[in-house]
Amino acid sequence: MSGHKLWPWRFDFERRTLTHIKGPVMDVYKPSQLPRYQNVRNRYTRLLADQPAEVSGVICTVRTVAPAVVAVASTTTEPPPKAVPECFMDVLEEWGCLWMWDSIRMTGTDGWLEDSIKEGTLCAVTDGSYIREIAPDLCSAALVLECSKGRGRIICSFPEQSLCANAYRAELLGLMAVHLILLAISRSVKGLTGHVKIFSDCLGALGRVLHLPHSRIPSKCKHADILKNIMINCKKLPFSLEYLHVRAHQDDEANYGELIRPAQLNCWADYAAKTVIWGRMGLDPLPQKPFPLEPITVWVGGHKLTPDTSSELRFWVHRQIAREVFVELKILDADAFDEVAWRQVFNTLHDLPRLFQIWACKQVTNIAATNKREYQIKKRKKIYHDPRCPSCNFAIETCEHVLSCCEAGRVDCLQKSIDSLEVWLEESNTEQVLKECILKFARGRGGTSMVLATVEHGQSYRRMAESQDFIGWRRFMEGMISKEIVEIQREHCGLEDIEITADRWAQGLITKLLEITHGQWLYRNVHVHDKVTGTLATRRNEELKEAILDQLYIEEEGLAEEDKYLLEINLKDLEHTSGVKQHYWLLAIRAARRWQELQAMEERGVAEHDLADEGRASE
Ligand SMILES: [Zn+2]
Image (cartoon, rainbow, N blue to C red; front, side, top):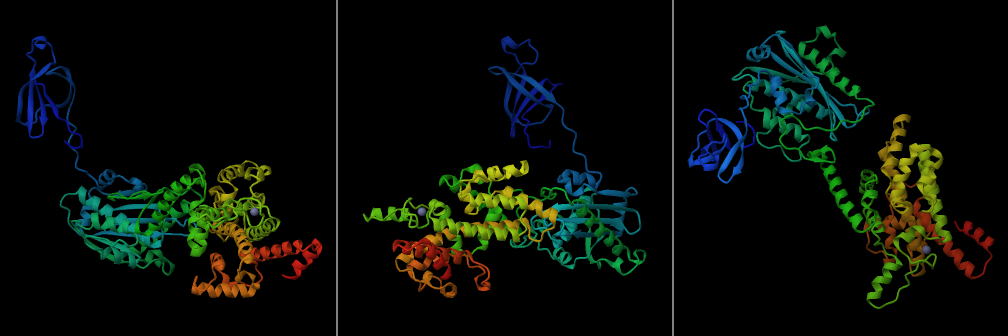
């Protein structure tokens, strides 16, 4: 019988025989002759062992009543033999993954499909649609199979959610659906031979399907999931296929009525596929689903993995590793980790210069060079190093302290950097309340919670606020923004028709926050190294820019040890710097220099108001 379950016991009513099948042999049980059970109904004892197996009677289960005595517990009749599918629709149903066929409709006389294929009058026309502006991760396909003698017609259209959605994929989806239907037809009619014409307006997709390899799709191939499905399952049909090109949108130039039938059907399919996309406007994205007959699918974070989405796999693997490390190093606990907009953080970091990436990593994991760290390292060699902060000369300098140092010049530098964040938020069409809250929270330097910052703005910001507070101020300043922040901006983008997407916006915000934190490092480093022999940072701004640019080309070589930190600067658009825009690193270096000069003068006993004037004059 079908199914994967084994039924070793069978009961034959007429012969009052119970058999226990054990592979090729069986034990035979007869009504028990043991003294206590002789006259009791339904008690069986083994009479023969290891007889050649022979199936008779109905499936049953037994229970053990006493040693060597069993009773029949239940019996059931055989399920009816599986019906031969009468119609290709039964076959589609058997395959599952019915989402593709939700809209399928068939009209026509009895047996029309069979006759049509036999006589070679069946035409399949398909078209796909993809409208990035409406749904960047959605494509759709529509298809029609029609007998050119008018005996019948099948129509169908469906959407597919996928990270690799594009117009080409949409065309391939339509072709795959046609192939699957043809395969289902061939399974429902034994020995069907004949001919089918398949039309598409996409030469690329037609060519791809026509010239599919026989055994293996190259691993880097785009949309391998679709091509594999066609290659493995649909290439050995008992009837022949002919792939034909039909020019798209012929109704633009001629009356629909004057077009040849495949061109008319192409216009219909084009419209039907577009209608599917339009119909999903404003709806939540669909989950991606496997195809009928698709043998193995690998899913990562709700998306099907194909060669086109391998970056997706990279993201989820990195995220998993990071989550463990973050918990282990007590950077964030697991719940807080899950609140962070990691996709945007991941994309941001991958766009930044390598040395800046490394700096960010060191800052987050507390291994950037601080006086505390140097103190620990030197202690092993029995050398004393002052673990205190070079700016405030008071607190132990840790990576955390780098952000929270109270020295006036640094706080001033931090606030000025946040001023430049404000300008950026303004320019980038940030949702108004969100902008205010971000600035309030950042300026609070860890003393203001996001909940407090949003308190006047009602419940809709509450969720974001709690989420961000969970992550905390320090991590926020290190770029770990809450995913709720991105969602607020996303909704805003949707309503206001804003050019920059919420994801790009989030990447910008994360970069700005990292730069602010890095600014605090530059400030600190200028303090430490200028006191020693730092040379680059003491140059004038223009010279500094030139010098850093030169250094970029020769990397670390030729750079004094104490100036190497300057290479970590995020210099992405250094060469396009207009001079009008204040770069975060110039701001930080200049601020550090000025406060150093002030300090020096203070030591020499110069009155403060004179200092301020001089500070300005030196700019
Ligand atoms: Zn300090």
